[in-house]
Image (cartoon, rainbow, N blue to C red; front, side):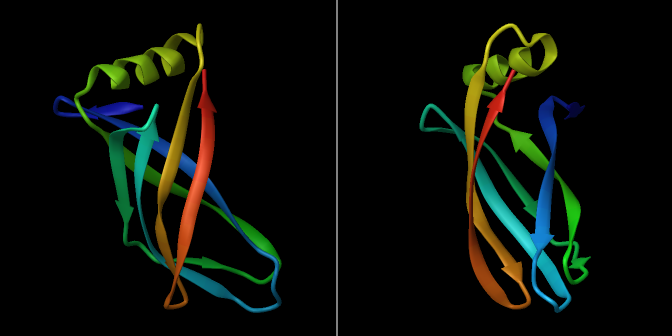
Length: 109
């Protein structure tokens, strides 16, 4: 985690796997981050990432967090680990010109 000015930015490593026998390219990913049904941040990455056949890559994306009090709970969960926060990442990714949904749940802390 780091700050861009006063905006907290959380870097996530998303593992993308390709189980097919053909190369795939993730062209973009956009998503929103929610906790307790509140929007707390968003991410966008437009850097193409190639996934070779039957392999995986880790996509590192920055989530810009909103200045809400719930964000402080997420930051404390990351820094101190003394409680847990469930977060949901929902959005879309463009893989070889096909738009696919992204729906992931994380437990932080």
